[in-house]
Length: 200
Image 1 (cartoon, rainbow, N blue to C red):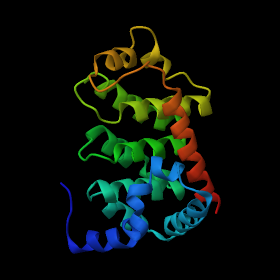
Image 2 (tube, rainbow, N blue to C red; image 1 turned 60 degrees about the vertical axis):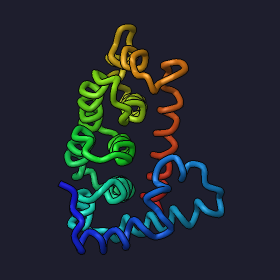
Image 3 (cartoon, rainbow, N blue to C red; image 1 turned 135 degrees about the vertical axis):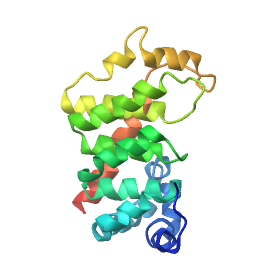
Image 4 (cartoon, rainbow, N blue to C red; image 1 turned 90 degrees about the vertical axis):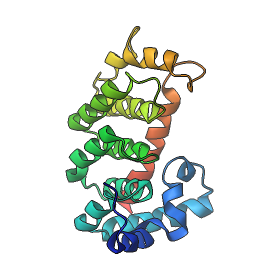
């Protein structure tokens, strides 16, 4: 159930709304000019340090705006104890527009458990070509995590006849080739932003 009470509204105004941050967490931050990017990262890093675990927990109960912001704040502050919550939210896919942020956060933590959570999502949602959820982002996040861990979890999905190739072929909203390099590249860039925030 999504919360809309006064407590979460206050946290939304504090952490999500300034400069419409919730809209910039994802692809938009990767396309910012240097003049816009540097203050954005500084403010994100400051809020990642300031937000409490209790506030993050509440934000994860909000709509997509709050959840997307909470995922980035958790990642930028290296709060990997939210890993299981992020994995559960990704698997539930209760709200739109937040799953990519969960994938970025899990990839930024970069452990075998994060790979497990991403693989669980893919195992469920690559069987659903009718759903245009976060399958490409999750596939990129898993492949990126593999590259960090020198693992091969993604190969199960990417092999000939694997779930990724079948989903890509059957999903009416997917076009072009079924390569994942663009998705891996996007995750790599997002994780670099998170690393910069964490080091600020």
